[in-house]
Length: 559
Ligand SMILES: [Zn+2]
Image (cartoon, rainbow, N blue to C red; front, side):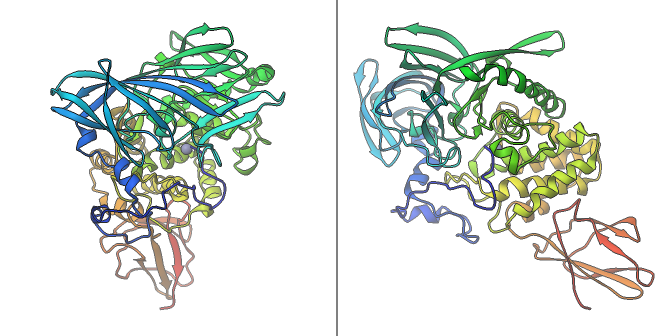
Protein backbone atom coordinates (compact mmCIF):
# COMPACT_ATOMS: atom_id res chain seq x y z
CA UNK A 1 0.00 0.00 0.00
CA UNK A 2 1.26 3.49 -0.77
CA UNK A 3 1.79 5.83 2.15
CA UNK A 4 -0.78 8.52 2.59
CA UNK A 5 0.61 11.90 1.67
CA UNK A 6 2.32 14.03 4.28
CA UNK A 7 2.63 13.37 7.96
CA UNK A 8 -0.94 12.30 8.50
CA UNK A 9 -0.85 8.75 9.65
CA UNK A 10 -2.97 6.09 8.10
CA UNK A 11 -6.42 6.14 9.60
CA UNK A 12 -6.66 2.75 11.15
CA UNK A 13 -10.19 1.87 12.05
CA UNK A 14 -10.04 0.77 15.62
CA UNK A 15 -13.24 0.18 17.48
CA UNK A 16 -13.90 2.82 20.07
CA UNK A 17 -15.21 0.10 22.31
CA UNK A 18 -12.95 -0.23 25.27
CA UNK A 19 -11.58 -3.66 25.93
CA UNK A 20 -14.13 -5.39 28.05
CA UNK A 21 -11.89 -8.01 29.53
CA UNK A 22 -8.90 -7.17 31.64
CA UNK A 23 -6.77 -9.85 30.03
CA UNK A 24 -6.52 -7.73 26.88
CA UNK A 25 -4.12 -5.20 28.33
CA UNK A 26 -2.43 -7.75 30.54
CA UNK A 27 -1.27 -9.52 27.40
CA UNK A 28 0.98 -6.62 26.66
CA UNK A 29 4.46 -7.45 27.82
CA UNK A 30 5.55 -3.90 28.65
CA UNK A 31 2.38 -1.90 29.22
CA UNK A 32 1.82 0.92 26.77
CA UNK A 33 5.03 2.85 26.97
CA UNK A 34 4.91 4.62 23.62
CA UNK A 35 1.27 5.45 23.05
CA UNK A 36 0.58 2.61 20.67
CA UNK A 37 -3.09 2.01 19.84
CA UNK A 38 -5.23 0.65 22.65
CA UNK A 39 -6.15 -2.99 22.31
CA UNK A 40 -9.86 -3.44 21.65
CA UNK A 41 -11.78 -6.64 22.22
CA UNK A 42 -12.28 -7.02 18.46
CA UNK A 43 -8.56 -6.69 17.77
CA UNK A 44 -7.90 -9.12 20.60
CA UNK A 45 -10.17 -11.67 18.90
CA UNK A 46 -8.74 -11.04 15.42
CA UNK A 47 -5.07 -10.52 16.32
CA UNK A 48 -4.50 -13.68 18.32
CA UNK A 49 -4.17 -17.20 17.04
CA UNK A 50 -6.31 -18.47 19.90
CA UNK A 51 -7.21 -22.14 20.39
CA UNK A 52 -10.23 -21.88 18.10
CA UNK A 53 -8.03 -20.64 15.26
CA UNK A 54 -4.77 -22.52 15.77
CA UNK A 55 -6.68 -25.83 15.70
CA UNK A 56 -7.08 -25.72 11.93
CA UNK A 57 -5.30 -24.58 8.80
CA UNK A 58 -7.14 -23.29 5.73
CA UNK A 59 -6.04 -24.87 2.46
CA UNK A 60 -8.62 -23.50 0.04
CA UNK A 61 -11.19 -20.72 -0.20
CA UNK A 62 -13.98 -21.00 -2.76
CA UNK A 63 -15.54 -17.54 -2.92
CA UNK A 64 -18.90 -17.07 -4.68
CA UNK A 65 -20.42 -13.60 -4.65
CA UNK A 66 -23.34 -12.08 -6.53
CA UNK A 67 -23.07 -8.27 -6.56
CA UNK A 68 -26.16 -6.04 -6.53
CA UNK A 69 -24.67 -2.78 -7.72
CA UNK A 70 -27.78 -0.64 -7.28
CA UNK A 71 -28.07 -1.65 -3.64
CA UNK A 72 -24.29 -1.74 -3.12
CA UNK A 73 -24.80 -5.14 -1.58
CA UNK A 74 -23.52 -8.65 -1.96
CA UNK A 75 -24.99 -12.08 -1.53
CA UNK A 76 -22.76 -15.11 -1.51
CA UNK A 77 -21.21 -18.14 0.01
CA UNK A 78 -17.66 -19.14 0.77
CA UNK A 79 -16.63 -22.78 1.12
CA UNK A 80 -13.58 -23.21 3.30
CA UNK A 81 -11.49 -26.35 3.02
CA UNK A 82 -9.30 -26.91 6.04
CA UNK A 83 -7.07 -29.39 7.86
CA UNK A 84 -7.53 -30.04 11.55
CA UNK A 85 -4.34 -29.63 13.56
CA UNK A 86 -5.94 -31.40 16.53
CA UNK A 87 -9.34 -32.84 17.48
CA UNK A 88 -11.87 -30.03 17.37
CA UNK A 89 -15.59 -29.49 17.59
CA UNK A 90 -15.61 -25.71 17.27
CA UNK A 91 -13.58 -23.12 15.44
CA UNK A 92 -13.45 -19.38 14.77
CA UNK A 93 -13.77 -17.71 11.43
CA UNK A 94 -14.13 -13.97 10.92
CA UNK A 95 -16.72 -11.85 9.17
CA UNK A 96 -17.56 -8.19 9.77
CA UNK A 97 -20.42 -8.00 12.22
CA UNK A 98 -22.52 -5.82 9.89
CA UNK A 99 -22.83 -8.69 7.40
CA UNK A 100 -25.61 -11.19 7.96
CA UNK A 101 -24.85 -14.90 8.11
CA UNK A 102 -27.78 -16.84 6.68
CA UNK A 103 -26.46 -20.28 7.54
CA UNK A 104 -23.30 -22.30 7.94
CA UNK A 105 -23.28 -25.88 6.66
CA UNK A 106 -21.06 -28.92 7.00
CA UNK A 107 -21.92 -32.15 5.13
CA UNK A 108 -25.27 -30.60 4.20
CA UNK A 109 -26.23 -30.04 7.82
CA UNK A 110 -26.71 -26.65 9.39
CA UNK A 111 -24.27 -25.75 12.13
CA UNK A 112 -24.95 -23.52 15.11
CA UNK A 113 -22.74 -20.50 15.61
CA UNK A 114 -22.33 -17.43 17.80
CA UNK A 115 -20.84 -14.06 17.01
CA UNK A 116 -18.74 -11.61 19.01
CA UNK A 117 -17.76 -8.48 17.09
CA UNK A 118 -16.15 -9.82 13.88
CA UNK A 119 -15.45 -13.30 15.25
CA UNK A 120 -17.80 -16.16 14.40
CA UNK A 121 -17.59 -19.26 16.60
CA UNK A 122 -18.88 -22.32 14.75
CA UNK A 123 -19.96 -25.49 16.57
CA UNK A 124 -19.64 -28.79 14.71
CA UNK A 125 -22.06 -31.61 15.40
CA UNK A 126 -19.34 -34.13 16.11
CA UNK A 127 -15.63 -34.06 16.76
CA UNK A 128 -13.42 -33.54 13.72
CA UNK A 129 -10.43 -35.75 14.33
CA UNK A 130 -6.87 -34.44 14.10
CA UNK A 131 -5.38 -34.49 10.58
CA UNK A 132 -8.77 -34.55 8.86
CA UNK A 133 -9.59 -32.59 5.73
CA UNK A 134 -12.99 -30.99 6.16
CA UNK A 135 -15.06 -28.37 4.42
CA UNK A 136 -17.77 -26.04 5.59
CA UNK A 137 -19.68 -23.28 3.86
CA UNK A 138 -20.78 -19.87 5.08
CA UNK A 139 -23.81 -18.29 3.35
CA UNK A 140 -24.02 -14.57 3.95
CA UNK A 141 -25.30 -11.26 2.62
CA UNK A 142 -25.29 -7.58 3.31
CA UNK A 143 -23.93 -4.17 2.46
CA UNK A 144 -20.16 -4.22 2.89
CA UNK A 145 -18.30 -1.28 4.37
CA UNK A 146 -17.75 1.58 1.94
CA UNK A 147 -14.24 2.95 1.52
CA UNK A 148 -13.89 6.37 3.14
CA UNK A 149 -10.42 7.03 1.75
CA UNK A 150 -9.11 4.04 -0.16
CA UNK A 151 -6.75 2.35 0.18
CA UNK A 152 -5.94 3.80 3.66
CA UNK A 153 -9.49 3.66 4.98
CA UNK A 154 -10.64 0.80 2.84
CA UNK A 155 -13.78 -0.99 1.82
CA UNK A 156 -15.77 -0.82 -1.40
CA UNK A 157 -15.39 2.11 -3.75
CA UNK A 158 -18.61 2.46 -5.74
CA UNK A 159 -17.88 4.96 -8.46
CA UNK A 160 -18.53 5.84 -12.09
CA UNK A 161 -16.14 5.99 -15.01
CA UNK A 162 -15.86 8.96 -17.43
CA UNK A 163 -18.89 7.66 -19.32
CA UNK A 164 -21.01 7.48 -16.18
CA UNK A 165 -20.88 3.70 -16.03
CA UNK A 166 -20.46 1.70 -12.83
CA UNK A 167 -16.89 1.16 -11.70
CA UNK A 168 -16.29 -0.65 -8.46
CA UNK A 169 -13.28 -1.92 -6.53
CA UNK A 170 -12.38 -3.13 -3.06
CA UNK A 171 -9.32 -2.46 -0.89
CA UNK A 172 -9.04 -3.80 2.66
CA UNK A 173 -5.51 -3.99 4.00
CA UNK A 174 -5.78 -3.24 7.71
CA UNK A 175 -9.56 -3.52 7.72
CA UNK A 176 -9.21 -7.18 6.77
CA UNK A 177 -10.84 -9.31 4.11
CA UNK A 178 -13.58 -10.10 6.63
CA UNK A 179 -15.26 -6.84 5.66
CA UNK A 180 -16.51 -8.62 2.52
CA UNK A 181 -15.97 -12.36 2.77
CA UNK A 182 -15.68 -14.84 5.66
CA UNK A 183 -12.21 -16.18 6.32
CA UNK A 184 -9.67 -16.89 9.02
CA UNK A 185 -8.54 -13.29 9.09
CA UNK A 186 -5.01 -13.58 10.44
CA UNK A 187 -2.03 -12.47 8.37
CA UNK A 188 -0.46 -15.95 8.51
CA UNK A 189 -3.65 -17.72 7.42
CA UNK A 190 -3.21 -17.76 3.67
CA UNK A 191 -5.15 -20.27 1.62
CA UNK A 192 -2.93 -22.41 -0.63
CA UNK A 193 -5.19 -21.42 -3.49
CA UNK A 194 -8.37 -19.40 -3.96
CA UNK A 195 -11.22 -19.60 -6.45
CA UNK A 196 -13.29 -16.48 -7.00
CA UNK A 197 -16.63 -16.59 -8.84
CA UNK A 198 -17.99 -13.06 -9.18
CA UNK A 199 -21.48 -12.57 -10.64
CA UNK A 200 -22.20 -9.12 -12.02
CA UNK A 201 -24.66 -7.48 -14.43
CA UNK A 202 -23.81 -8.65 -17.94
CA UNK A 203 -22.82 -5.18 -19.16
CA UNK A 204 -19.88 -5.24 -16.74
CA UNK A 205 -16.72 -7.33 -16.34
CA UNK A 206 -15.45 -8.62 -12.98
CA UNK A 207 -11.69 -8.93 -12.55
CA UNK A 208 -10.11 -10.96 -9.77
CA UNK A 209 -6.64 -12.22 -8.89
CA UNK A 210 -4.79 -14.86 -10.84
CA UNK A 211 -6.11 -16.19 -14.12
CA UNK A 212 -9.54 -16.12 -15.69
CA UNK A 213 -10.90 -19.66 -15.90
CA UNK A 214 -14.37 -19.20 -17.29
CA UNK A 215 -17.07 -16.72 -18.18
CA UNK A 216 -20.64 -17.96 -17.83
CA UNK A 217 -23.45 -15.88 -19.28
CA UNK A 218 -26.82 -16.18 -17.56
CA UNK A 219 -28.62 -13.54 -19.60
CA UNK A 220 -28.79 -10.42 -17.47
CA UNK A 221 -25.93 -11.65 -15.28
CA UNK A 222 -22.50 -13.08 -15.97
CA UNK A 223 -20.19 -15.01 -13.69
CA UNK A 224 -16.43 -14.49 -13.99
CA UNK A 225 -14.39 -17.29 -12.46
CA UNK A 226 -10.84 -16.44 -11.40
CA UNK A 227 -8.29 -18.73 -9.80
CA UNK A 228 -5.10 -18.14 -7.80
CA UNK A 229 -2.87 -21.19 -7.59
CA UNK A 230 -0.55 -19.83 -4.92
CA UNK A 231 -0.79 -18.80 -1.27
CA UNK A 232 -2.28 -15.33 -1.06
CA UNK A 233 -2.86 -12.90 1.81
CA UNK A 234 -6.59 -12.60 2.44
CA UNK A 235 -6.44 -8.81 2.08
CA UNK A 236 -4.97 -9.25 -1.39
CA UNK A 237 -7.99 -11.12 -2.71
CA UNK A 238 -9.81 -8.51 -4.73
CA UNK A 239 -12.65 -7.73 -7.06
CA UNK A 240 -12.83 -4.98 -9.65
CA UNK A 241 -15.99 -4.42 -11.66
CA UNK A 242 -16.30 -2.14 -14.68
CA UNK A 243 -16.19 -1.85 -18.43
CA UNK A 244 -12.83 -3.56 -18.59
CA UNK A 245 -10.91 -4.80 -21.58
CA UNK A 246 -7.67 -6.78 -21.55
CA UNK A 247 -4.44 -5.19 -22.79
CA UNK A 248 -2.04 -7.94 -23.67
CA UNK A 249 1.72 -7.91 -23.28
CA UNK A 250 4.47 -10.47 -22.93
CA UNK A 251 7.33 -10.73 -20.46
CA UNK A 252 10.38 -12.55 -21.78
CA UNK A 253 12.60 -14.31 -19.28
CA UNK A 254 15.33 -16.56 -20.61
CA UNK A 255 13.58 -18.91 -23.01
CA UNK A 256 10.22 -18.40 -21.32
CA UNK A 257 7.48 -16.12 -22.52
CA UNK A 258 4.99 -15.05 -19.86
CA UNK A 259 1.74 -13.52 -21.02
CA UNK A 260 0.39 -10.48 -19.24
CA UNK A 261 -3.21 -9.35 -19.45
CA UNK A 262 -3.67 -5.92 -17.93
CA UNK A 263 -7.26 -4.80 -17.38
CA UNK A 264 -8.23 -1.20 -18.04
CA UNK A 265 -11.39 0.68 -18.89
CA UNK A 266 -12.25 0.21 -22.55
CA UNK A 267 -11.41 3.79 -23.53
CA UNK A 268 -7.89 3.52 -22.03
CA UNK A 269 -6.65 0.67 -24.22
CA UNK A 270 -4.11 2.71 -26.20
CA UNK A 271 -2.98 4.71 -23.16
CA UNK A 272 -2.36 1.58 -21.12
CA UNK A 273 -0.64 -0.30 -23.92
CA UNK A 274 1.85 2.58 -24.15
CA UNK A 275 2.21 3.17 -20.41
CA UNK A 276 2.20 -0.24 -18.75
CA UNK A 277 5.26 -1.85 -20.43
CA UNK A 278 7.39 -0.06 -17.81
CA UNK A 279 6.13 -2.68 -15.34
CA UNK A 280 8.40 -5.20 -17.07
CA UNK A 281 11.46 -3.17 -16.15
CA UNK A 282 10.22 -3.16 -12.56
CA UNK A 283 9.83 -6.94 -12.57
CA UNK A 284 13.37 -7.35 -13.93
CA UNK A 285 14.82 -5.08 -11.27
CA UNK A 286 13.11 -6.91 -8.41
CA UNK A 287 14.14 -10.31 -9.77
CA UNK A 288 17.75 -9.13 -10.02
CA UNK A 289 18.00 -7.99 -6.41
CA UNK A 290 15.36 -9.99 -4.54
CA UNK A 291 14.83 -13.26 -6.40
CA UNK A 292 12.28 -14.68 -8.78
CA UNK A 293 8.76 -13.38 -9.17
CA UNK A 294 6.74 -16.03 -7.36
CA UNK A 295 3.44 -15.93 -9.23
CA UNK A 296 4.14 -16.74 -12.87
CA UNK A 297 1.44 -19.45 -12.73
CA UNK A 298 -1.03 -16.73 -11.77
CA UNK A 299 0.38 -14.15 -14.14
CA UNK A 300 1.12 -10.50 -13.50
CA UNK A 301 -1.34 -7.81 -14.40
CA UNK A 302 -2.17 -4.23 -13.63
CA UNK A 303 -5.84 -3.45 -13.11
CA UNK A 304 -7.11 0.12 -13.41
CA UNK A 305 -9.13 1.21 -10.36
CA UNK A 306 -10.95 4.33 -9.15
CA UNK A 307 -8.52 4.84 -6.23
CA UNK A 308 -4.74 5.23 -6.05
CA UNK A 309 -3.73 1.58 -6.09
CA UNK A 310 -2.92 -1.47 -4.01
CA UNK A 311 -0.64 -4.48 -4.13
CA UNK A 312 -3.34 -7.08 -4.81
CA UNK A 313 -1.32 -10.18 -5.60
CA UNK A 314 -1.06 -10.95 -9.34
CA UNK A 315 -3.65 -8.20 -9.93
CA UNK A 316 -1.83 -5.04 -8.88
CA UNK A 317 -4.31 -2.17 -8.94
CA UNK A 318 -3.44 1.14 -10.50
CA UNK A 319 -5.11 4.54 -10.27
CA UNK A 320 -2.36 7.10 -10.78
CA UNK A 321 -3.63 8.53 -14.05
CA UNK A 322 -1.12 7.04 -16.50
CA UNK A 323 1.28 9.96 -16.07
CA UNK A 324 4.92 10.10 -14.93
CA UNK A 325 4.65 13.74 -13.89
CA UNK A 326 0.98 14.65 -13.56
CA UNK A 327 -0.57 11.57 -11.97
CA UNK A 328 -2.20 12.08 -8.56
CA UNK A 329 0.82 10.64 -6.77
CA UNK A 330 3.43 11.53 -9.40
CA UNK A 331 3.05 15.22 -8.54
CA UNK A 332 3.77 14.76 -4.85
CA UNK A 333 6.20 11.87 -5.13
CA UNK A 334 8.26 12.49 -8.25
CA UNK A 335 10.49 9.69 -9.45
CA UNK A 336 12.84 11.52 -11.81
CA UNK A 337 10.44 10.85 -14.69
CA UNK A 338 11.70 7.29 -15.08
CA UNK A 339 9.01 5.21 -13.39
CA UNK A 340 5.42 5.59 -12.27
CA UNK A 341 5.42 5.68 -8.44
CA UNK A 342 2.38 3.42 -8.15
CA UNK A 343 3.66 0.84 -10.59
CA UNK A 344 7.00 0.43 -8.83
CA UNK A 345 5.61 0.62 -5.31
CA UNK A 346 2.70 -1.79 -5.66
CA UNK A 347 4.56 -4.16 -7.97
CA UNK A 348 7.49 -4.29 -5.53
CA UNK A 349 5.02 -5.54 -2.93
CA UNK A 350 4.79 -8.75 -4.92
CA UNK A 351 8.10 -9.39 -3.15
CA UNK A 352 7.74 -7.37 0.07
CA UNK A 353 4.41 -8.39 1.56
CA UNK A 354 2.91 -10.78 -0.95
CA UNK A 355 5.77 -13.27 -1.19
CA UNK A 356 7.49 -12.51 2.13
CA UNK A 357 4.67 -11.65 4.52
CA UNK A 358 5.12 -10.25 8.02
CA UNK A 359 4.23 -12.97 10.54
CA UNK A 360 2.32 -10.35 12.52
CA UNK A 361 1.07 -7.03 11.11
CA UNK A 362 3.11 -5.13 13.68
CA UNK A 363 6.22 -6.15 11.69
CA UNK A 364 4.83 -4.63 8.52
CA UNK A 365 7.95 -2.57 7.88
CA UNK A 366 9.00 -5.79 6.10
CA UNK A 367 6.36 -4.83 3.53
CA UNK A 368 6.59 -1.04 3.53
CA UNK A 369 10.03 -0.07 4.83
CA UNK A 370 11.82 -2.55 2.62
CA UNK A 371 9.56 -1.54 -0.27
CA UNK A 372 10.44 2.16 -0.04
CA UNK A 373 14.11 1.26 0.47
CA UNK A 374 14.01 -0.93 -2.65
CA UNK A 375 12.86 2.12 -4.62
CA UNK A 376 16.07 3.93 -3.64
CA UNK A 377 18.00 0.88 -4.88
CA UNK A 378 15.99 1.01 -8.10
CA UNK A 379 17.27 4.52 -8.76
CA UNK A 380 20.79 3.57 -7.72
CA UNK A 381 20.66 0.74 -10.24
CA UNK A 382 18.87 2.72 -12.94
CA UNK A 383 21.21 5.70 -12.84
CA UNK A 384 24.26 3.69 -11.76
CA UNK A 385 24.55 6.19 -8.96
CA UNK A 386 24.53 5.61 -5.20
CA UNK A 387 24.02 9.35 -4.85
CA UNK A 388 20.66 9.33 -6.69
CA UNK A 389 19.47 6.64 -4.26
CA UNK A 390 20.57 8.84 -1.36
CA UNK A 391 18.86 11.82 -2.95
CA UNK A 392 15.61 9.85 -3.16
CA UNK A 393 15.87 8.88 0.51
CA UNK A 394 16.64 12.49 1.44
CA UNK A 395 13.42 13.63 -0.25
CA UNK A 396 11.51 11.35 2.15
CA UNK A 397 13.39 12.13 5.33
CA UNK A 398 11.29 15.03 6.56
CA UNK A 399 8.22 12.79 6.71
CA UNK A 400 9.67 10.83 9.62
CA UNK A 401 8.09 11.79 12.94
CA UNK A 402 9.73 9.49 15.56
CA UNK A 403 6.62 9.35 17.75
CA UNK A 404 6.00 5.64 18.16
CA UNK A 405 8.21 2.62 17.46
CA UNK A 406 8.01 1.10 14.00
CA UNK A 407 7.24 -2.28 15.61
CA UNK A 408 4.54 -2.41 18.29
CA UNK A 409 2.96 -5.40 20.00
CA UNK A 410 2.23 -8.74 18.41
CA UNK A 411 -1.13 -10.53 18.54
CA UNK A 412 -3.15 -7.29 18.60
CA UNK A 413 -4.14 -6.98 14.94
CA UNK A 414 -1.90 -3.92 14.97
CA UNK A 415 -1.32 -2.95 11.34
CA UNK A 416 1.67 -0.71 11.89
CA UNK A 417 1.00 1.33 8.75
CA UNK A 418 2.05 4.66 10.22
CA UNK A 419 4.42 6.95 8.39
CA UNK A 420 7.61 5.84 10.09
CA UNK A 421 7.06 2.27 8.92
CA UNK A 422 7.67 3.53 5.40
CA UNK A 423 10.21 6.33 5.52
CA UNK A 424 12.08 5.52 8.68
CA UNK A 425 11.91 1.86 7.72
CA UNK A 426 13.69 2.74 4.49
CA UNK A 427 16.22 4.93 6.28
CA UNK A 428 16.94 2.22 8.82
CA UNK A 429 17.79 -0.16 5.98
CA UNK A 430 20.02 2.48 4.39
CA UNK A 431 21.70 3.02 7.77
CA UNK A 432 22.26 -0.69 8.26
CA UNK A 433 23.91 -0.91 4.86
CA UNK A 434 26.28 1.88 5.94
CA UNK A 435 27.02 0.19 9.26
CA UNK A 436 27.78 -3.16 7.60
CA UNK A 437 29.94 -1.23 5.14
CA UNK A 438 30.24 -4.15 2.72
CA UNK A 439 27.84 -4.13 -0.22
CA UNK A 440 28.51 -7.74 -1.18
CA UNK A 441 27.31 -8.84 2.23
CA UNK A 442 24.45 -6.33 2.30
CA UNK A 443 22.94 -7.36 -1.01
CA UNK A 444 23.32 -11.02 -0.10
CA UNK A 445 21.44 -10.37 3.15
CA UNK A 446 18.57 -8.81 1.23
CA UNK A 447 18.40 -11.45 -1.47
CA UNK A 448 18.71 -14.42 0.86
CA UNK A 449 16.14 -13.00 3.27
CA UNK A 450 13.72 -12.65 0.37
CA UNK A 451 14.43 -15.96 -1.36
CA UNK A 452 14.61 -18.09 1.78
CA UNK A 453 11.32 -16.66 3.06
CA UNK A 454 9.60 -16.56 -0.34
CA UNK A 455 5.93 -17.55 -0.08
CA UNK A 456 6.45 -17.53 3.66
CA UNK A 457 6.44 -15.39 6.78
CA UNK A 458 9.10 -13.48 8.68
CA UNK A 459 9.42 -10.99 11.49
CA UNK A 460 12.00 -8.45 12.64
CA UNK A 461 13.99 -11.09 14.53
CA UNK A 462 14.16 -13.30 11.43
CA UNK A 463 15.59 -10.39 9.48
CA UNK A 464 18.28 -9.70 12.05
CA UNK A 465 19.12 -13.40 12.30
CA UNK A 466 19.92 -13.26 8.60
CA UNK A 467 21.98 -10.10 9.15
CA UNK A 468 23.92 -11.87 11.90
CA UNK A 469 24.45 -14.97 9.78
CA UNK A 470 25.89 -13.06 6.84
CA UNK A 471 27.75 -10.28 8.65
CA UNK A 472 29.00 -12.28 11.62
CA UNK A 473 27.80 -9.53 13.98
CA UNK A 474 24.80 -9.29 16.26
CA UNK A 475 22.84 -6.18 15.35
CA UNK A 476 19.98 -6.67 17.81
CA UNK A 477 21.10 -3.50 19.64
CA UNK A 478 20.45 -1.73 16.34
CA UNK A 479 17.01 -3.34 15.92
CA UNK A 480 16.03 -2.43 19.49
CA UNK A 481 16.94 1.19 18.88
CA UNK A 482 15.48 1.71 15.43
CA UNK A 483 12.47 -0.64 15.42
CA UNK A 484 11.39 -0.99 19.05
CA UNK A 485 12.06 2.57 20.22
CA UNK A 486 10.85 5.77 18.54
CA UNK A 487 13.98 7.71 19.44
CA UNK A 488 16.34 8.91 16.76
CA UNK A 489 19.97 8.54 17.86
CA UNK A 490 21.67 11.88 18.40
CA UNK A 491 25.38 12.26 17.92
CA UNK A 492 26.41 14.90 20.41
CA UNK A 493 29.76 16.47 19.69
CA UNK A 494 32.03 19.41 20.36
CA UNK A 495 35.58 20.24 19.48
CA UNK A 496 38.46 22.08 21.00
CA UNK A 497 41.59 23.29 19.29
CA UNK A 498 43.12 19.86 19.76
CA UNK A 499 40.39 17.25 20.15
CA UNK A 500 36.94 16.22 18.84
CA UNK A 501 34.54 14.79 21.46
CA UNK A 502 31.49 12.69 20.61
CA UNK A 503 28.89 10.41 22.22
CA UNK A 504 25.45 8.90 21.55
CA UNK A 505 22.44 10.49 23.19
CA UNK A 506 18.72 9.61 23.07
CA UNK A 507 19.66 5.92 22.70
CA UNK A 508 19.45 2.67 24.63
CA UNK A 509 22.45 2.12 26.90
CA UNK A 510 23.76 -0.71 24.74
CA UNK A 511 23.68 1.26 21.49
CA UNK A 512 27.15 0.97 19.97
CA UNK A 513 26.54 1.76 16.32
CA UNK A 514 29.63 2.89 14.42
CA UNK A 515 29.31 6.03 12.36
CA UNK A 516 31.37 7.76 9.72
CA UNK A 517 32.69 11.29 10.08
CA UNK A 518 34.37 13.42 7.46
CA UNK A 519 37.44 14.89 9.12
CA UNK A 520 38.72 17.65 6.86
CA UNK A 521 37.11 15.76 3.98
CA UNK A 522 38.55 12.35 4.86
CA UNK A 523 36.28 9.58 6.09
CA UNK A 524 36.88 8.30 9.59
CA UNK A 525 34.80 5.61 11.33
CA UNK A 526 34.24 5.86 15.06
CA UNK A 527 32.22 3.74 17.49
CA UNK A 528 30.58 6.11 19.94
CA UNK A 529 28.90 5.00 23.14
CA UNK A 530 26.82 6.95 25.63
CA UNK A 531 30.08 8.20 27.21
CA UNK A 532 32.26 10.82 25.59
CA UNK A 533 35.25 9.67 23.58
CA UNK A 534 37.62 11.84 21.60
CA UNK A 535 40.35 11.91 19.02
CA UNK A 536 43.08 14.35 18.19
CA UNK A 537 42.49 17.02 15.55
CA UNK A 538 44.26 20.06 14.21
CA UNK A 539 42.95 23.51 15.10
CA UNK A 540 39.72 24.53 13.28
CA UNK A 541 39.27 21.15 11.62
CA UNK A 542 36.02 20.74 9.69
CA UNK A 543 34.19 17.63 10.89
CA UNK A 544 30.94 16.44 9.30
CA UNK A 545 28.67 13.69 10.59
CA UNK A 546 27.65 11.49 7.64
CA UNK A 547 23.91 11.89 8.16
CA UNK A 548 23.36 11.11 4.48
CA UNK A 549 24.43 7.54 5.29
CA UNK A 550 23.04 7.13 8.81
CA UNK A 551 19.67 8.04 10.28
CA UNK A 552 21.05 10.13 13.15
CA UNK A 553 20.74 13.69 14.33
CA UNK A 554 24.06 15.49 14.80
CA UNK A 555 23.89 17.96 17.70
CA UNK A 556 26.71 20.31 18.57
CA UNK A 557 26.93 20.98 22.30
CA UNK A 558 29.03 23.29 24.41
CA UNK A 559 31.96 21.70 26.24
ZN1 LIG B 1 3.07 -0.06 0.23
